[in-house]
Image 1 (cartoon, rainbow, N blue to C red):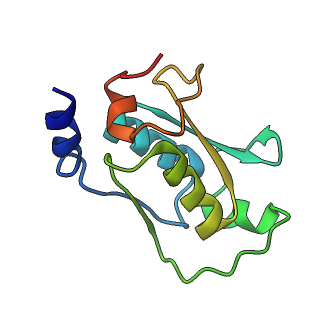
Image 2: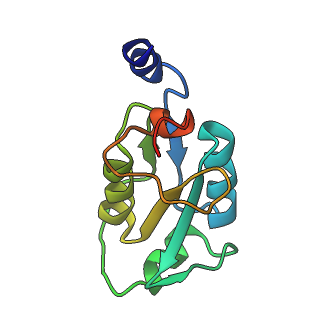
Length: 121
């Protein structure tokens, strides 16, 4: 089923879009609905305030990122580590993708679709 599941990931949840003007808690909730995984935003080593927007958090980070990206698109077929790097590259913020309960980090080398199906230990 692995190959079939990976192929289906290219079509299922085709694109999860992240807009910089949305609040972090809204982005996290939308991510959970789309992939049944937890998306955690950090400011330094501290979990960021969910009431901040992604753009506001970007202004509070020490990195200055000038991006022309109006939004970011995440697909189930992307590797977890690549998706996390996109947030850093496009918005200068650190994110971690965790399991549905938000207790365990998902390995960077598997796809978001595999993580959503629990195909890791």
